Length: 295
Image (cartoon, rainbow, N blue to C red; front, side, top):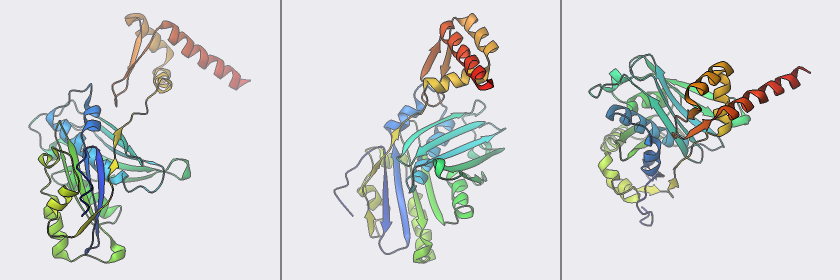
């Protein structure tokens, strides 16, 4: 254990068991998690599943060996209509959810009733995106994603996710088949230990000491933490594309009623305003581009 790794927030800490064919990672999001919630009034239930999704996405993304992006998307016709969480290989993250029909006393199975979860790995222009579909089974998002790792990635995994309004985080343990299967008793024991993780454990940041506390009986090699940050990819150009999709007639009508049209990013809540001059220019540019294409 490296005592030089002091407690930090907004990090992923990879680690390895010296005497067992098991690797792991621990994540905490605090400042970036607060930024994801800025401008939104999420209920306790929404906060829990969005924060757990953020932790899970970061844990998956930290293993990327190429320039790309992980997207975890939950959608359906039930109380949780949409949740999207994204992370790049640099652990630049953003996320949002829309769940107007969630009640405070709903259980996880009730919240995700009728939903499916898709995990997409996008390697950019290098290759076609890969997508795995997750069945929303069990009593928690952790159980649903453990099922994904077993069936789609074919990797035995233990996953524990926690979240409240102040912090979210989690721990992921995975067997390394190339080094042989761990003893079943040890694998079961590690899963029970990982399941003891709580938000309170992250109140002062995470570090090697927390890994050591969770797995006190094991020799664990802890690697350098990797920072995570909130980063949204919205831009004025993308806001213009939203208005183009809305259509000229409807955009102009909204502008006449309100004097301007506001486009608010669902991820970062940034508002971009377009006045009548902006809108006239926007659709005039499209007309010119269309004419040039015809000729």
